[in-house]
Image (cartoon, rainbow over all chains, first blue to last red; front, side, top):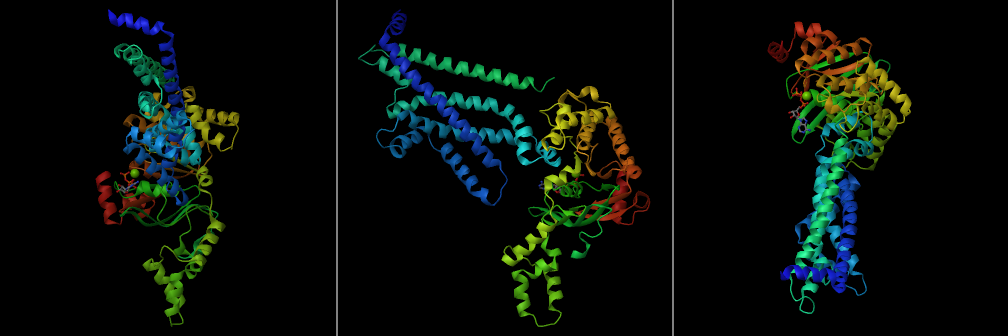
Length: 230
Length: 313
Ligand SMILES: Nc1ncnc2c1ncn2[C@@H]1O[C@H](COP(=O)(O)OP(=O)(O)OP(=O)(O)O)[C@@H](O)[C@H]1O
Ligand SMILES: [Mg+2]
Protein backbone atom coordinates (compact mmCIF):
# COMPACT_ATOMS: atom_id res chain seq x y z
CA UNK A 1 0.00 0.00 0.00
CA UNK A 2 3.01 2.20 -0.55
CA UNK A 3 1.18 3.75 -3.52
CA UNK A 4 -1.64 5.14 -1.39
CA UNK A 5 0.63 6.39 1.35
CA UNK A 6 2.62 8.22 -1.30
CA UNK A 7 -0.54 9.81 -2.67
CA UNK A 8 -1.35 11.06 0.81
CA UNK A 9 2.21 12.28 1.13
CA UNK A 10 2.01 14.19 -2.14
CA UNK A 11 -1.25 15.91 -1.34
CA UNK A 12 -0.25 16.76 2.23
CA UNK A 13 3.19 18.15 1.44
CA UNK A 14 2.87 21.87 0.76
CA UNK A 15 6.05 21.96 -1.33
CA UNK A 16 4.73 19.35 -3.76
CA UNK A 17 1.36 21.01 -4.03
CA UNK A 18 3.08 24.31 -4.78
CA UNK A 19 5.02 22.63 -7.58
CA UNK A 20 1.85 21.15 -9.06
CA UNK A 21 0.01 24.45 -8.73
CA UNK A 22 2.86 26.27 -10.44
CA UNK A 23 2.93 23.76 -13.30
CA UNK A 24 -0.85 23.75 -13.65
CA UNK A 25 -0.86 27.51 -13.98
CA UNK A 26 1.69 27.41 -16.77
CA UNK A 27 -0.22 24.70 -18.63
CA UNK A 28 -3.52 26.55 -18.31
CA UNK A 29 -2.13 29.96 -19.24
CA UNK A 30 -0.42 28.65 -22.35
CA UNK A 31 -3.43 26.54 -23.34
CA UNK A 32 -6.02 29.29 -22.94
CA UNK A 33 -3.99 32.04 -24.60
CA UNK A 34 -2.84 29.77 -27.44
CA UNK A 35 -6.42 28.55 -27.97
CA UNK A 36 -7.67 32.15 -28.25
CA UNK A 37 -4.86 33.08 -30.61
CA UNK A 38 -5.48 29.92 -32.63
CA UNK A 39 -9.21 30.58 -32.95
CA UNK A 40 -8.61 34.18 -34.01
CA UNK A 41 -5.86 33.30 -36.46
CA UNK A 42 -7.73 30.26 -37.75
CA UNK A 43 -10.93 32.20 -38.41
CA UNK A 44 -9.03 34.94 -40.20
CA UNK A 45 -7.05 32.50 -42.33
CA UNK A 46 -10.19 30.49 -43.18
CA UNK A 47 -12.00 33.64 -44.32
CA UNK A 48 -9.08 34.65 -46.51
CA UNK A 49 -8.80 31.13 -47.93
CA UNK A 50 -12.46 30.94 -48.99
CA UNK A 51 -12.58 34.49 -50.39
CA UNK A 52 -12.98 34.70 -54.16
CA UNK A 53 -9.87 34.76 -56.32
CA UNK A 54 -9.30 38.36 -57.32
CA UNK A 55 -6.30 40.56 -58.07
CA UNK A 56 -4.93 41.81 -54.79
CA UNK A 57 -6.31 38.95 -52.67
CA UNK A 58 -3.81 36.62 -54.36
CA UNK A 59 -1.06 37.66 -51.96
CA UNK A 60 -2.82 37.07 -48.63
CA UNK A 61 -4.29 33.86 -50.04
CA UNK A 62 -0.84 32.58 -50.98
CA UNK A 63 0.53 33.53 -47.55
CA UNK A 64 -2.30 31.71 -45.79
CA UNK A 65 -1.82 28.63 -47.92
CA UNK A 66 1.92 28.56 -47.19
CA UNK A 67 1.24 29.08 -43.48
CA UNK A 68 -1.17 26.15 -43.25
CA UNK A 69 1.08 23.90 -45.31
CA UNK A 70 4.22 24.65 -43.31
CA UNK A 71 2.60 24.40 -39.88
CA UNK A 72 0.81 21.16 -40.67
CA UNK A 73 3.82 19.68 -42.39
CA UNK A 74 6.38 20.12 -39.62
CA UNK A 75 6.56 18.69 -36.05
CA UNK A 76 5.21 20.77 -33.18
CA UNK A 77 8.38 20.30 -31.17
CA UNK A 78 10.47 21.71 -34.01
CA UNK A 79 8.13 24.72 -34.31
CA UNK A 80 8.55 25.32 -30.57
CA UNK A 81 12.34 25.09 -30.83
CA UNK A 82 12.40 27.53 -33.74
CA UNK A 83 10.34 30.01 -31.72
CA UNK A 84 12.47 29.59 -28.59
CA UNK A 85 15.96 29.34 -30.10
CA UNK A 86 15.68 31.30 -33.36
CA UNK A 87 12.83 33.81 -33.48
CA UNK A 88 12.74 34.86 -29.83
CA UNK A 89 16.23 33.74 -28.92
CA UNK A 90 17.17 37.01 -27.20
CA UNK A 91 17.35 36.99 -23.43
CA UNK A 92 14.55 38.46 -21.36
CA UNK A 93 11.77 37.46 -23.74
CA UNK A 94 9.09 35.85 -21.55
CA UNK A 95 9.00 32.13 -22.26
CA UNK A 96 5.23 31.94 -21.66
CA UNK A 97 4.81 34.31 -24.58
CA UNK A 98 7.14 32.25 -26.75
CA UNK A 99 5.15 29.11 -26.00
CA UNK A 100 1.79 30.86 -26.45
CA UNK A 101 2.84 32.13 -29.87
CA UNK A 102 4.25 28.76 -30.91
CA UNK A 103 1.12 26.84 -29.89
CA UNK A 104 -1.29 29.54 -31.05
CA UNK A 105 0.28 29.70 -34.49
CA UNK A 106 0.28 25.92 -34.68
CA UNK A 107 -3.32 25.62 -33.55
CA UNK A 108 -4.43 28.39 -35.94
CA UNK A 109 -3.50 26.29 -38.95
CA UNK A 110 -5.61 23.35 -37.80
CA UNK A 111 -8.51 25.58 -36.76
CA UNK A 112 -8.34 27.28 -40.17
CA UNK A 113 -8.64 23.94 -41.92
CA UNK A 114 -11.57 22.93 -39.71
CA UNK A 115 -13.42 26.19 -40.28
CA UNK A 116 -12.74 26.11 -44.01
CA UNK A 117 -14.09 22.57 -44.16
CA UNK A 118 -17.12 23.59 -42.11
CA UNK A 119 -17.93 26.49 -44.42
CA UNK A 120 -17.47 24.39 -47.55
CA UNK A 121 -19.72 21.68 -46.10
CA UNK A 122 -22.67 24.09 -46.14
CA UNK A 123 -24.67 23.46 -49.33
CA UNK A 124 -23.70 25.94 -52.04
CA UNK A 125 -27.43 26.40 -52.68
CA UNK A 126 -27.65 28.36 -49.40
CA UNK A 127 -25.15 30.89 -50.68
CA UNK A 128 -26.77 31.05 -54.10
CA UNK A 129 -30.20 31.68 -52.59
CA UNK A 130 -28.78 34.51 -50.49
CA UNK A 131 -26.91 36.11 -53.36
CA UNK A 132 -29.89 35.72 -55.71
CA UNK A 133 -31.95 37.87 -53.32
CA UNK A 134 -29.35 40.62 -53.69
CA UNK A 135 -27.63 40.04 -50.36
CA UNK A 136 -23.94 40.86 -50.31
CA UNK A 137 -21.30 38.18 -49.93
CA UNK A 138 -20.61 39.41 -46.43
CA UNK A 139 -24.21 39.24 -45.22
CA UNK A 140 -24.74 35.87 -46.89
CA UNK A 141 -21.68 34.53 -45.15
CA UNK A 142 -22.38 36.00 -41.73
CA UNK A 143 -26.15 35.42 -41.55
CA UNK A 144 -26.62 32.21 -43.51
CA UNK A 145 -23.44 30.22 -44.08
CA UNK A 146 -21.41 30.74 -40.90
CA UNK A 147 -24.29 30.01 -38.50
CA UNK A 148 -24.74 26.67 -40.28
CA UNK A 149 -21.00 26.03 -40.48
CA UNK A 150 -20.50 26.57 -36.74
CA UNK A 151 -22.67 23.57 -35.98
CA UNK A 152 -20.50 21.38 -38.19
CA UNK A 153 -17.27 22.82 -36.84
CA UNK A 154 -17.74 22.82 -33.04
CA UNK A 155 -16.87 19.11 -32.55
CA UNK A 156 -13.66 19.29 -34.58
CA UNK A 157 -12.62 22.57 -32.96
CA UNK A 158 -13.21 20.86 -29.61
CA UNK A 159 -10.90 18.03 -30.61
CA UNK A 160 -8.31 20.55 -31.68
CA UNK A 161 -8.47 22.30 -28.28
CA UNK A 162 -8.09 18.98 -26.47
CA UNK A 163 -5.09 18.09 -28.61
CA UNK A 164 -3.63 21.52 -27.91
CA UNK A 165 -3.86 21.16 -24.13
CA UNK A 166 -2.11 17.82 -24.18
CA UNK A 167 0.48 18.98 -26.68
CA UNK A 168 1.56 21.84 -24.38
CA UNK A 169 3.33 19.20 -22.31
CA UNK A 170 6.29 19.47 -24.68
CA UNK A 171 7.17 22.94 -23.32
CA UNK A 172 9.34 21.11 -20.83
CA UNK A 173 11.64 20.53 -23.80
CA UNK A 174 12.53 24.25 -23.79
CA UNK A 175 12.97 24.13 -20.03
CA UNK A 176 9.55 25.45 -19.05
CA UNK A 177 7.87 24.39 -15.87
CA UNK A 178 4.40 23.04 -16.72
CA UNK A 179 2.21 20.33 -15.27
CA UNK A 180 4.18 17.51 -16.88
CA UNK A 181 7.46 19.00 -15.67
CA UNK A 182 5.94 19.26 -12.19
CA UNK A 183 5.46 15.49 -12.12
CA UNK A 184 9.07 14.99 -13.14
CA UNK A 185 10.38 17.34 -10.45
CA UNK A 186 8.27 15.82 -7.68
CA UNK A 187 9.35 12.33 -8.70
CA UNK A 188 13.05 13.14 -8.83
CA UNK A 189 15.66 11.95 -6.32
CA UNK A 190 15.61 15.18 -4.28
CA UNK A 191 11.89 14.81 -3.66
CA UNK A 192 9.78 11.65 -3.61
CA UNK A 193 12.36 9.59 -5.49
CA UNK A 194 9.54 7.73 -7.25
CA UNK A 195 7.75 8.71 -10.44
CA UNK A 196 4.70 6.51 -10.36
CA UNK A 197 2.59 8.57 -7.97
CA UNK A 198 3.32 12.10 -9.27
CA UNK A 199 2.91 10.91 -12.87
CA UNK A 200 -0.43 9.28 -12.03
CA UNK A 201 -1.68 12.36 -10.20
CA UNK A 202 -0.69 14.68 -13.03
CA UNK A 203 -2.30 12.34 -15.56
CA UNK A 204 -5.54 12.66 -13.55
CA UNK A 205 -5.23 16.44 -13.71
CA UNK A 206 -4.98 16.32 -17.51
CA UNK A 207 -7.92 13.92 -17.65
CA UNK A 208 -10.00 16.23 -15.48
CA UNK A 209 -9.23 19.25 -17.67
CA UNK A 210 -10.04 17.36 -20.86
CA UNK A 211 -13.20 15.94 -19.33
CA UNK A 212 -14.43 19.38 -18.32
CA UNK A 213 -13.69 20.73 -21.77
CA UNK A 214 -15.46 17.83 -23.47
CA UNK A 215 -18.46 18.40 -21.25
CA UNK A 216 -18.51 22.11 -22.12
CA UNK A 217 -18.37 21.37 -25.83
CA UNK A 218 -21.21 18.86 -25.54
CA UNK A 219 -23.31 21.53 -23.86
CA UNK A 220 -22.63 24.05 -26.61
CA UNK A 221 -23.38 21.44 -29.27
CA UNK A 222 -26.66 20.53 -27.65
CA UNK A 223 -27.73 24.15 -27.42
CA UNK A 224 -26.91 24.76 -31.08
CA UNK A 225 -28.79 21.65 -32.15
CA UNK A 226 -31.84 22.64 -30.12
CA UNK A 227 -32.09 25.58 -32.52
CA UNK A 228 -33.03 23.64 -35.62
CA UNK A 229 -35.58 21.18 -34.31
CA UNK A 230 -38.80 22.86 -33.41
CA UNK B 1 -24.61 42.66 -83.68
CA UNK B 2 -23.62 46.25 -83.24
CA UNK B 3 -23.78 48.83 -80.56
CA UNK B 4 -27.00 50.20 -82.05
CA UNK B 5 -29.35 47.83 -80.28
CA UNK B 6 -28.19 48.72 -76.78
CA UNK B 7 -30.11 51.00 -74.56
CA UNK B 8 -32.58 52.43 -77.05
CA UNK B 9 -35.80 50.46 -77.20
CA UNK B 10 -36.16 50.18 -73.43
CA UNK B 11 -39.84 50.40 -72.61
CA UNK B 12 -40.99 46.82 -73.04
CA UNK B 13 -37.68 45.14 -72.42
CA UNK B 14 -36.99 43.31 -69.20
CA UNK B 15 -33.97 41.07 -69.67
CA UNK B 16 -31.86 41.20 -72.80
CA UNK B 17 -29.26 38.53 -73.42
CA UNK B 18 -26.79 39.41 -76.13
CA UNK B 19 -24.58 36.72 -77.66
CA UNK B 20 -23.88 35.13 -74.28
CA UNK B 21 -21.14 32.53 -74.09
CA UNK B 22 -20.26 30.47 -71.06
CA UNK B 23 -17.40 28.03 -70.73
CA UNK B 24 -16.47 25.84 -67.79
CA UNK B 25 -12.81 25.22 -68.54
CA UNK B 26 -12.77 23.67 -71.99
CA UNK B 27 -16.51 22.87 -71.90
CA UNK B 28 -18.33 25.45 -74.03
CA UNK B 29 -21.78 25.29 -72.43
CA UNK B 30 -23.45 28.37 -73.94
CA UNK B 31 -22.36 29.10 -77.47
CA UNK B 32 -23.70 32.54 -78.20
CA UNK B 33 -27.29 32.80 -76.96
CA UNK B 34 -29.36 35.90 -77.66
CA UNK B 35 -32.92 36.61 -76.62
CA UNK B 36 -35.07 39.35 -75.16
CA UNK B 37 -37.57 38.81 -72.38
CA UNK B 38 -40.28 41.44 -72.51
CA UNK B 39 -42.17 42.83 -69.56
CA UNK B 40 -45.10 40.60 -68.70
CA UNK B 41 -43.88 37.83 -70.96
CA UNK B 42 -43.74 34.21 -69.79
CA UNK B 43 -40.94 32.27 -71.39
CA UNK B 44 -40.48 28.53 -70.94
CA UNK B 45 -37.07 26.99 -71.59
CA UNK B 46 -37.06 23.32 -72.54
CA UNK B 47 -34.44 20.96 -73.89
CA UNK B 48 -32.45 17.84 -73.16
CA UNK B 49 -30.36 17.43 -70.02
CA UNK B 50 -27.03 19.22 -70.26
CA UNK B 51 -28.16 21.54 -73.06
CA UNK B 52 -27.43 24.61 -70.94
CA UNK B 53 -30.90 25.60 -69.71
CA UNK B 54 -29.89 26.15 -66.10
CA UNK B 55 -26.68 27.85 -67.13
CA UNK B 56 -28.63 30.28 -69.32
CA UNK B 57 -31.05 31.07 -66.49
CA UNK B 58 -28.18 31.50 -64.02
CA UNK B 59 -26.41 33.84 -66.42
CA UNK B 60 -29.45 36.13 -66.29
CA UNK B 61 -28.80 37.05 -62.66
CA UNK B 62 -25.07 36.36 -62.87
CA UNK B 63 -25.00 33.38 -60.56
CA UNK B 64 -22.86 32.25 -63.46
CA UNK B 65 -20.73 34.96 -64.99
CA UNK B 66 -20.83 34.75 -68.78
CA UNK B 67 -17.42 34.38 -70.41
CA UNK B 68 -18.58 36.45 -73.37
CA UNK B 69 -21.50 38.62 -74.44
CA UNK B 70 -23.71 40.80 -72.29
CA UNK B 71 -26.77 40.60 -70.06
CA UNK B 72 -28.98 43.66 -69.66
CA UNK B 73 -31.81 44.36 -67.25
CA UNK B 74 -34.08 47.02 -68.70
CA UNK B 75 -31.57 49.61 -69.92
CA UNK B 76 -28.74 48.73 -67.56
CA UNK B 77 -25.82 46.40 -68.10
CA UNK B 78 -25.32 43.58 -65.58
CA UNK B 79 -22.20 41.96 -67.00
CA UNK B 80 -18.96 43.71 -67.79
CA UNK B 81 -19.26 45.27 -71.22
CA UNK B 82 -18.16 42.97 -74.02
CA UNK B 83 -15.53 44.98 -75.95
CA UNK B 84 -16.44 43.31 -79.25
CA UNK B 85 -19.80 45.15 -79.25
CA UNK B 86 -18.24 48.61 -79.16
CA UNK B 87 -16.38 49.92 -82.23
CA UNK B 88 -14.94 52.85 -80.26
CA UNK B 89 -13.46 50.41 -77.77
CA UNK B 90 -12.02 48.17 -80.46
CA UNK B 91 -10.47 51.19 -82.19
CA UNK B 92 -8.63 52.01 -78.96
CA UNK B 93 -6.95 48.59 -78.86
CA UNK B 94 -3.32 47.84 -79.69
CA UNK B 95 -4.49 45.06 -82.01
CA UNK B 96 -6.54 47.55 -84.02
CA UNK B 97 -3.65 50.04 -84.09
CA UNK B 98 -1.12 47.52 -85.41
CA UNK B 99 -3.54 46.20 -88.04
CA UNK B 100 -4.41 49.73 -89.09
CA UNK B 101 -0.71 50.58 -89.46
CA UNK B 102 -0.31 47.85 -92.07
CA UNK B 103 -3.56 48.63 -93.90
CA UNK B 104 -3.76 50.44 -97.20
CA UNK B 105 -7.37 50.20 -98.37
CA UNK B 106 -9.70 53.10 -97.73
CA UNK B 107 -12.29 50.82 -96.15
CA UNK B 108 -9.73 49.40 -93.73
CA UNK B 109 -11.53 50.53 -90.55
CA UNK B 110 -14.74 48.54 -91.10
CA UNK B 111 -12.83 45.49 -92.39
CA UNK B 112 -10.46 45.47 -89.45
CA UNK B 113 -13.26 45.84 -86.90
CA UNK B 114 -15.05 42.99 -88.60
CA UNK B 115 -11.96 40.79 -88.54
CA UNK B 116 -11.29 41.51 -84.88
CA UNK B 117 -14.89 40.60 -84.04
CA UNK B 118 -15.12 37.45 -86.12
CA UNK B 119 -11.71 36.06 -85.26
CA UNK B 120 -11.86 37.28 -81.64
CA UNK B 121 -8.44 38.86 -81.94
CA UNK B 122 -8.36 40.84 -78.69
CA UNK B 123 -5.59 39.76 -76.35
CA UNK B 124 -5.09 40.10 -72.62
CA UNK B 125 -3.36 43.44 -72.68
CA UNK B 126 -4.66 45.93 -75.19
CA UNK B 127 -3.21 49.04 -73.66
CA UNK B 128 -4.44 51.93 -71.56
CA UNK B 129 -6.55 53.60 -74.21
CA UNK B 130 -8.51 50.39 -74.61
CA UNK B 131 -8.98 50.00 -70.88
CA UNK B 132 -10.16 53.58 -70.53
CA UNK B 133 -12.65 53.28 -73.39
CA UNK B 134 -14.05 50.06 -71.94
CA UNK B 135 -14.26 51.55 -68.46
CA UNK B 136 -16.21 54.50 -69.89
CA UNK B 137 -18.80 52.14 -71.39
CA UNK B 138 -19.01 50.28 -68.10
CA UNK B 139 -19.32 53.48 -66.09
CA UNK B 140 -22.14 54.69 -68.28
CA UNK B 141 -24.25 51.52 -68.35
CA UNK B 142 -23.45 49.13 -65.58
CA UNK B 143 -25.80 48.35 -62.71
CA UNK B 144 -24.47 46.94 -59.46
CA UNK B 145 -25.30 43.25 -59.47
CA UNK B 146 -26.71 43.22 -55.95
CA UNK B 147 -29.18 45.92 -56.93
CA UNK B 148 -30.08 44.03 -60.09
CA UNK B 149 -30.70 40.84 -58.15
CA UNK B 150 -33.10 42.63 -55.82
CA UNK B 151 -35.26 43.13 -58.91
CA UNK B 152 -34.98 39.51 -60.10
CA UNK B 153 -36.40 36.67 -58.03
CA UNK B 154 -34.99 33.19 -58.42
CA UNK B 155 -36.49 29.84 -57.49
CA UNK B 156 -34.29 26.78 -57.38
CA UNK B 157 -34.91 23.11 -58.02
CA UNK B 158 -33.86 22.26 -54.46
CA UNK B 159 -35.70 25.17 -52.77
CA UNK B 160 -32.63 26.39 -50.87
CA UNK B 161 -34.57 27.77 -47.93
CA UNK B 162 -32.20 29.04 -45.25
CA UNK B 163 -31.96 26.07 -42.88
CA UNK B 164 -30.88 28.11 -39.88
CA UNK B 165 -33.96 30.32 -39.98
CA UNK B 166 -37.67 30.02 -39.43
CA UNK B 167 -40.06 30.44 -42.33
CA UNK B 168 -40.76 34.02 -41.29
CA UNK B 169 -37.06 34.83 -41.02
CA UNK B 170 -36.51 33.34 -44.48
CA UNK B 171 -39.00 35.84 -45.87
CA UNK B 172 -37.82 38.90 -43.97
CA UNK B 173 -34.03 38.51 -44.05
CA UNK B 174 -33.36 40.16 -47.40
CA UNK B 175 -35.85 43.05 -47.25
CA UNK B 176 -34.62 43.96 -43.75
CA UNK B 177 -30.88 43.45 -44.35
CA UNK B 178 -31.07 45.47 -47.56
CA UNK B 179 -32.94 48.20 -45.66
CA UNK B 180 -35.89 48.12 -48.04
CA UNK B 181 -38.32 47.60 -45.18
CA UNK B 182 -38.36 47.86 -41.42
CA UNK B 183 -38.67 44.60 -39.53
CA UNK B 184 -42.37 45.27 -38.83
CA UNK B 185 -43.14 46.11 -42.46
CA UNK B 186 -41.26 43.06 -43.67
CA UNK B 187 -43.06 40.78 -41.25
CA UNK B 188 -46.42 42.18 -42.20
CA UNK B 189 -45.70 41.62 -45.89
CA UNK B 190 -44.35 38.14 -45.13
CA UNK B 191 -47.53 37.20 -43.28
CA UNK B 192 -49.67 38.43 -46.18
CA UNK B 193 -47.65 36.22 -48.52
CA UNK B 194 -47.82 33.22 -46.19
CA UNK B 195 -51.57 33.64 -45.85
CA UNK B 196 -51.88 33.76 -49.57
CA UNK B 197 -50.30 30.31 -49.85
CA UNK B 198 -52.15 29.02 -46.78
CA UNK B 199 -49.01 28.51 -44.70
CA UNK B 200 -49.32 31.31 -42.17
CA UNK B 201 -49.40 28.72 -39.37
CA UNK B 202 -45.91 27.56 -40.36
CA UNK B 203 -44.26 30.91 -39.76
CA UNK B 204 -42.18 29.78 -36.79
CA UNK B 205 -41.29 26.36 -38.21
CA UNK B 206 -37.87 25.49 -39.55
CA UNK B 207 -37.54 24.31 -43.17
CA UNK B 208 -36.49 20.78 -42.13
CA UNK B 209 -40.02 20.19 -40.79
CA UNK B 210 -41.83 21.08 -44.04
CA UNK B 211 -42.83 19.02 -47.07
CA UNK B 212 -41.19 19.64 -50.45
CA UNK B 213 -44.25 21.36 -51.84
CA UNK B 214 -44.47 23.64 -48.81
CA UNK B 215 -40.76 24.46 -49.05
CA UNK B 216 -41.00 25.37 -52.70
CA UNK B 217 -44.06 27.56 -52.22
CA UNK B 218 -42.27 29.34 -49.40
CA UNK B 219 -39.20 29.75 -51.59
CA UNK B 220 -41.42 31.38 -54.21
CA UNK B 221 -42.94 33.85 -51.76
CA UNK B 222 -39.49 34.52 -50.30
CA UNK B 223 -38.56 35.82 -53.74
CA UNK B 224 -41.87 37.71 -54.00
CA UNK B 225 -41.16 39.45 -50.71
CA UNK B 226 -38.62 41.52 -52.64
CA UNK B 227 -41.29 42.67 -55.13
CA UNK B 228 -39.24 41.54 -58.13
CA UNK B 229 -39.92 42.62 -61.70
CA UNK B 230 -39.09 39.22 -63.07
CA UNK B 231 -38.98 35.69 -61.69
CA UNK B 232 -36.55 33.02 -62.80
CA UNK B 233 -37.55 29.41 -62.12
CA UNK B 234 -35.10 26.53 -62.55
CA UNK B 235 -37.11 23.32 -62.69
CA UNK B 236 -39.22 24.31 -59.68
CA UNK B 237 -41.06 20.97 -59.53
CA UNK B 238 -38.35 18.46 -60.48
CA UNK B 239 -37.38 17.63 -56.89
CA UNK B 240 -40.97 17.19 -55.71
CA UNK B 241 -42.99 14.07 -55.08
CA UNK B 242 -45.66 13.84 -57.80
CA UNK B 243 -48.52 14.66 -55.45
CA UNK B 244 -46.94 18.03 -54.61
CA UNK B 245 -46.24 19.20 -58.14
CA UNK B 246 -49.75 20.57 -58.59
CA UNK B 247 -49.73 22.98 -55.65
CA UNK B 248 -46.47 24.56 -56.82
CA UNK B 249 -47.52 24.83 -60.47
CA UNK B 250 -50.82 26.39 -59.36
CA UNK B 251 -48.98 29.11 -57.49
CA UNK B 252 -46.75 29.82 -60.49
CA UNK B 253 -49.82 29.96 -62.73
CA UNK B 254 -51.41 32.49 -60.38
CA UNK B 255 -48.33 34.67 -60.66
CA UNK B 256 -48.42 34.34 -64.43
CA UNK B 257 -52.05 35.43 -64.50
CA UNK B 258 -51.22 38.46 -62.41
CA UNK B 259 -48.82 39.56 -65.13
CA UNK B 260 -45.46 38.65 -63.60
CA UNK B 261 -42.63 38.44 -66.09
CA UNK B 262 -41.11 34.98 -65.84
CA UNK B 263 -38.59 32.60 -67.29
CA UNK B 264 -39.19 28.96 -66.40
CA UNK B 265 -36.85 26.10 -67.10
CA UNK B 266 -39.10 23.06 -66.97
CA UNK B 267 -39.65 19.48 -67.97
CA UNK B 268 -43.42 19.88 -67.47
CA UNK B 269 -44.45 20.22 -71.11
CA UNK B 270 -48.14 20.51 -70.32
CA UNK B 271 -47.43 23.39 -67.99
CA UNK B 272 -45.14 25.12 -70.49
CA UNK B 273 -47.81 24.81 -73.14
CA UNK B 274 -50.48 26.24 -70.88
CA UNK B 275 -48.59 29.12 -69.29
CA UNK B 276 -45.87 30.23 -71.69
CA UNK B 277 -46.18 32.95 -74.33
CA UNK B 278 -42.99 31.72 -75.91
CA UNK B 279 -40.98 28.51 -75.67
CA UNK B 280 -37.23 28.27 -76.18
CA UNK B 281 -35.86 24.89 -77.13
CA UNK B 282 -32.21 24.61 -76.17
CA UNK B 283 -29.81 22.07 -77.58
CA UNK B 284 -26.05 21.89 -77.26
CA UNK B 285 -25.67 25.37 -75.81
CA UNK B 286 -27.81 27.14 -78.41
CA UNK B 287 -31.42 28.14 -78.78
CA UNK B 288 -32.19 25.64 -81.50
CA UNK B 289 -35.79 26.77 -81.98
CA UNK B 290 -38.24 29.18 -80.45
CA UNK B 291 -41.87 30.05 -80.93
CA UNK B 292 -45.30 30.12 -79.36
CA UNK B 293 -46.27 26.91 -77.60
CA UNK B 294 -48.69 26.13 -80.42
CA UNK B 295 -45.96 26.46 -83.05
CA UNK B 296 -43.25 24.66 -81.15
CA UNK B 297 -45.25 21.79 -79.72
CA UNK B 298 -47.57 21.18 -82.64
CA UNK B 299 -45.33 21.77 -85.61
CA UNK B 300 -41.68 21.85 -84.59
CA UNK B 301 -39.40 22.66 -87.52
CA UNK B 302 -36.01 21.65 -86.15
CA UNK B 303 -35.18 17.94 -86.31
CA UNK B 304 -33.71 18.02 -82.80
CA UNK B 305 -36.87 19.62 -81.44
CA UNK B 306 -38.96 16.95 -83.10
CA UNK B 307 -36.78 14.20 -81.67
CA UNK B 308 -36.85 15.73 -78.18
CA UNK B 309 -40.61 16.25 -78.18
CA UNK B 310 -41.28 12.75 -79.46
CA UNK B 311 -39.44 11.44 -76.40
CA UNK B 312 -41.07 13.62 -73.75
CA UNK B 313 -44.63 14.14 -74.99
N1 LIG C 1 -20.29 24.75 -62.40
C1 LIG C 1 -20.05 23.93 -63.44
N2 LIG C 1 -18.82 23.45 -63.68
C2 LIG C 1 -18.58 22.64 -64.73
N3 LIG C 1 -19.50 22.24 -65.61
C3 LIG C 1 -20.76 22.68 -65.43
C4 LIG C 1 -21.11 23.54 -64.35
N4 LIG C 1 -22.42 23.81 -64.42
C5 LIG C 1 -22.88 23.15 -65.49
N5 LIG C 1 -21.89 22.47 -66.11
C6 LIG C 1 -22.03 21.66 -67.33
O1 LIG C 1 -22.64 22.44 -68.31
C7 LIG C 1 -23.54 21.67 -69.08
C8 LIG C 1 -24.90 22.32 -69.08
O2 LIG C 1 -25.39 22.31 -67.77
P1 LIG C 1 -26.82 22.85 -67.37
O3 LIG C 1 -26.98 22.60 -65.93
O4 LIG C 1 -26.98 24.23 -67.86
O5 LIG C 1 -27.78 21.89 -68.19
P2 LIG C 1 -29.35 21.77 -68.14
O6 LIG C 1 -29.84 22.00 -69.51
O7 LIG C 1 -29.89 22.64 -67.06
O8 LIG C 1 -29.55 20.25 -67.77
P3 LIG C 1 -30.60 19.54 -66.77
O9 LIG C 1 -31.87 19.37 -67.54
O10 LIG C 1 -29.96 18.24 -66.47
O11 LIG C 1 -30.75 20.41 -65.57
C9 LIG C 1 -23.52 20.28 -68.50
O12 LIG C 1 -22.67 19.49 -69.29
C10 LIG C 1 -22.94 20.47 -67.14
O13 LIG C 1 -22.21 19.34 -66.74
MG1 LIG D 1 -30.71 22.29 -65.13
